[in-house]
Length: 595
Image (cartoon, rainbow, N blue to C red; front, side, top):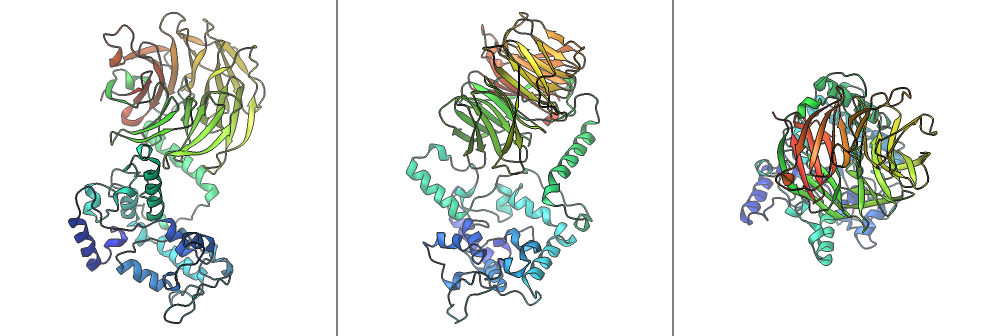
């Protein structure tokens, strides 16, 4: 019954778990003292194939023979009736290709390990299979057939609700008998605030006990489509393209097809909004914006804000710290310091829980939101000014120039070869902002001397076009919109190049130099673009029509001589249109469409 956790499958055992839960104080109560997934369970199942895991857990010795993985029948009986065993299976059980030839199977003691004798006198060798399986390959094949059957497909969404969905925590979890040790839940303990010794103890407990994964869904997961189980499976290398096609179809169905510069991207720099347009947001959606919420992220200044791909999580960089805030839960999920040098830019790697952070220490830091720590640091060639993410990879701009980092399939080894993009800048100048067109092979950057450069990534050569802001001040932000490439400058000007790759078409001036306060960032989504800067005021532009749609004034600026500057901005389509502003004073504001 996939609607129940493993611990609730047997009624008599479930009664004991419920009694335990009722006897414990609220806040500390749990039903299961063990977890469904932990390193020890991986070592248990893979003892014959990866003996070093088991040896590491047991101080250089194998576990007692009576506790080793001996037979499928015994393992099933244990998880059905033992009060200390609620583990689930590994993917290896459902991959027949991992069991051919037989010696490659984790069920076969092909290494001829001396695993000892049980109290019954039986030698621990190959895993005993059920009578309906004549070989490891047949066993895994039949497990896979069961997993892909219509019966399982019709109920698989119930398991998703328990592990990743709305029954993972809260009242729904209690009603589903799905309550584990409080420290196993993501965000339950603020590790950063603990003394070092207490933190080590808690991390050891989490590593050994197991950890509940990130909650991905707040509503019941939809049922799998009838007949989906009979469709051919995709190979791993085919998944990215299939996901991209499905995502594009979903967006097209929701927003309709549009012409011009239509694409998607996520990322930002100290003055850029991430460089990408995306399907469907019209500037008119934000013609009468309302302040949805504002909160203090405790990091000054907020040099970068990014709306994550779930549409509700905000990732921000300020000072040397990273902040991750969940709008739905209205709480901080992560508060971490990344080194000591100030962070200037941030980009979320789509499909991963990873943020790429640019820093003044001439490094790119790969930060795992799930683990709350930096997992990799890479040389950037200079102090990073801005990052932009697109289909072509990750564009990193600094005083030393521009580099395009190619993304590779693995999120943890995120970058492969690099492509240096010559900017042909005058001596003493450098790059201050970055943008990648997610759908076309175009990259753009803003320079400290007021110039804007555009590259055709197919050639990898010098810029195909350059132009300048009239005041000659630093171009603090560039972004691709549905109406072309928009850019803003510290001289207050905002320009739009409708066909940026056409050298005979001049940019139009949305705002002239000196007509407003310095603009410190710009972001675009569909036909909408937002520039913002000093004084706490943001301007919403209709790029298609070349006009100002409205202005957004931070409450901090109302009645003040000069409110805190807006240092970063991000646009998204969630809720019909959402604008995220990061302020100089560390506060973050969320503005939404007036529904």
